[in-house]
Image (cartoon, rainbow, N blue to C red; front, side, top):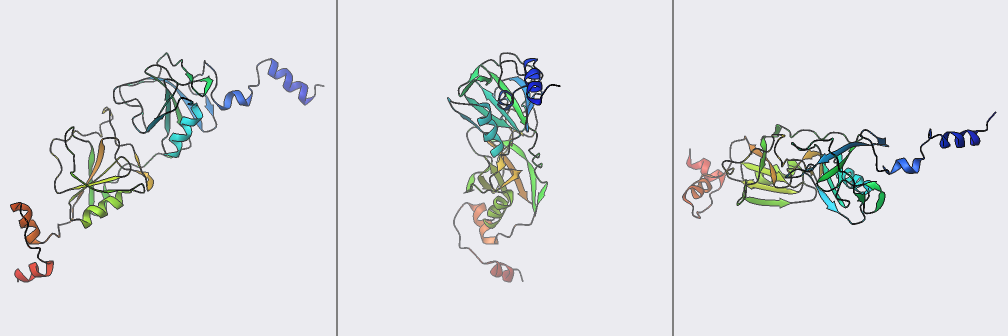
Length: 273
């Protein structure tokens, strides 16, 4: 009877056992789609597109390894991670159209581990963390604030013109509260941490909620990773459906475009009696 040690040695020599060290880091030039190590699954090689195949955050490192990119994206609550050009890491929640898996030429070794493949020239090796829960869609209503949509920022202006708050712990509620306190009817979250307000919404904005749009609202809120706070040059806009509580004097001043004496709400009510 063969001992356990001799049996393991025999199976290894026959190729029936793959050493864990070779599997753990997705090493090998012929990595096949659907290969899974731990929580991570290799989806395949995708072509790069304008606006990026994975549209969220990114970083570059001459010593890039696949696990570095996976850890970075996971830390920021992104399911998908992609390595490109041997040294670039991209994160996202979806593969942007018209990019598609099944491309060839993911053939560049990673800067930090030449046994790994980190995409290629305009090619991205994409991995999926199967243990990350999907982020909830933007709530249709947050208190009295109704979600309008995700919009691309205009080239030479802003969708909402007042940056009222920037906070690494941003949430949708924090932004709508800040805009509400400042008596603005529109609130918008962007880049995971920025809050914009406005008396009006810029006209003719391009809706970025269409999945074919190359730019998306896909940044998790810094203070609540289960919420989406806009994206890179994209903003999620909310409108306050409650009646404005601005004083009549403030409204008249805004209409006339000049400074006026601010009248208390009680004084406005008294005038109407």
